[in-house]
Amino acid sequence: KFYEKEVDGGSDPKCNNMLTCFAFHMYAGLRSGGGIGDSIKDPDGDEYEVARMVFDITFFFFVIIILLAIIQGLIIDSFGELRDREEEVKSDDETKCFICGIGKERFDVTPHGFQLHVEKEHNISNYLFLFMYLFTKDSTEHTGQESYILENLRAMKLDFFPVGAAFKFNSEDHSPSGSHCGSSAQTSSQGGSS
View 1 (cartoon, rainbow, N blue to C red):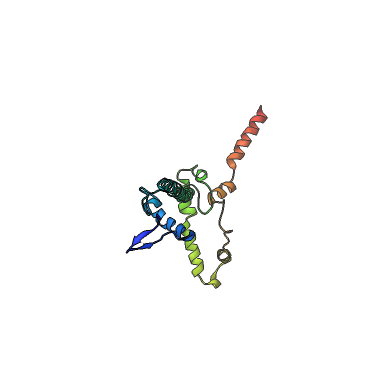
View 2 (cartoon, one colour):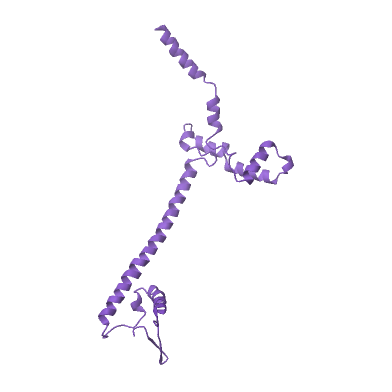
C-alpha cells in the first residue's frame, strides 16, 4: 500500500510483482539521496510504521551507504592503478633509455651522460625517421641492413634494437687498456725488486 501513487483519481501501482518491485527500488531508491523512503508514501500513523522505518533505514544503510561506497571505491582504486602505472612509465622515461633500456645511473658517471646519450646516440626521432625512410623507399633500393630492419618491423620483431648496448660502453670495452697494463707492470716490477 505504500507503493501506490494516486494519479488522476486512479492508482498507479509500483510494486505488482518481484520484477517490478526490484526495478522500482533500483530506479527510485538509488536516485534518491535518502533511499527508497523518499520515493514512497510516508508511514505516518500507519500500523506498519515501525516495520517501514526499519525497512527504509536498512535499505539506506545497505544500498545507499555500503553498496555505493563499494562501487565508488572500485572506481577510485582503478583510477589509482592507472595513475600508478602512468607514474611508473614516466619514471622509466626519465631514468632509462627507451631504445637500449640502460639506466641513467650508468651513463651519468660523466656529466650529462644520460642526456647526451638520449639526444645524440639513441634519439627516438632518428629511429622514427629511419622507419619512415624505409617504408617510403623503393624496396629494390634497400641495402641488406635496411631490408633486415624492414622485415623485422613488418613481422613486429624488435631484434634489431640495441637492447642493453650503447656505443659508449662498446668503445670502452674495446679501448686499449694501456693504463691497466702499466699498473700491472708497475706492481710486478715492484714485486720483483722487493
